[in-house]
Image (cartoon, rainbow, N blue to C red):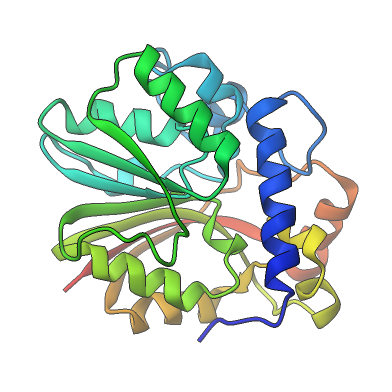
Length: 257
């Protein structure tokens, strides 16, 4: 079970504030890189990005690429946990086509508002958004072919609930395709209880074996796990954590039995 003692109210406020800035001021100073150059380096196809609203790409703060693992096809139903300003939902929309459906889940008003505006203006008619927590989406059980998430699950205080929610949403044989931050060594309490480091995608990173075990305990079988050496933090404190505890990005494909 991955449940921590971090101050959840303080964490939620910090995360909302940071990702409001990501939506409204994407060229500001953050612990992490953002934008198209990052997306292409992680593996996103330029022809897909050319069809996605530029403002969504500007606020892209993902940590990896997973669409090669998700292998989305026409007509599929997809949920994006922590959809931010919408870049991954728009890429998924291109994959599933007009007969498919993509739902983005986020708790930050600025991100939701930006994604909804961009979806309307760019006529992504098969994409909708819902304000909710990623561990409690309120969506129909067993109704989705794929649940995806990029750099968000590490921000959740109760990752076990997130993985159980993902499994609940998936149909039998459905896929979980995610990129996230994990660690090679368990983080010390001083880091885990630091809301600033949580919001920077470091303090909430779970140890790799524990993270994988939580996915499997939710009823999902891990089929592939890939490291993303193309991803790196840019602040000194984040780089120090990377070196000290083996903080790294991975992409994971898991399937519901």
